[in-house]
Image 1 (tube, rainbow, N blue to C red):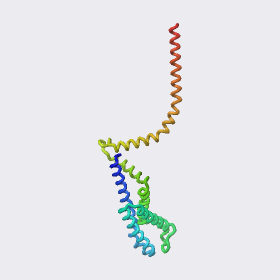
Image 2: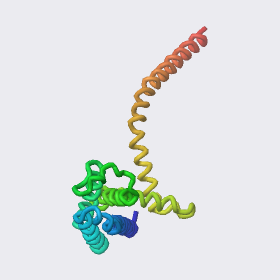
Image 3: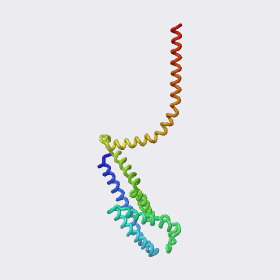
Length: 212
């Protein structure tokens, strides 16, 4: 793969993760903003916590979108993780001044927020770790290769992908091939020995006939 194409793919991967992360944490904050009024009716501190979730989520989203720095992703992870744990605790044990939350698992707004929280938490290791970015880049290469028309599939980039896949296949098949060879080699030696004995016997009989 050429250096230009590799840089293009890395840039696309970075932008994709940035937009996904910013959108996910933004939706987490917006949902808490929409639900804050309802929770002010249960307890003032709950309404304030929901507003704080919105404010910090907005900071994290802007930080991810504008800078892409690690601190923004980690801030978003703290917000999403705290909100998710708080949701579980409220449904299992209830909350101060809101004990009736216990057992209320069928809450559409709450589960929608949980979905975005878990999606953001899943995107964090993809964005912050080298192996996560490599995984996204590899998937993008596979998608790009599948979209290539037949006339363009003989490009160097595609050949690199094919070579990489073939290398993986060879590595996976190597133990089986060695095992098969260890079983076939004694049989091959036995067959060659039989053929050699037969050839010598035929030569010996031929000489006897000629003398006779």
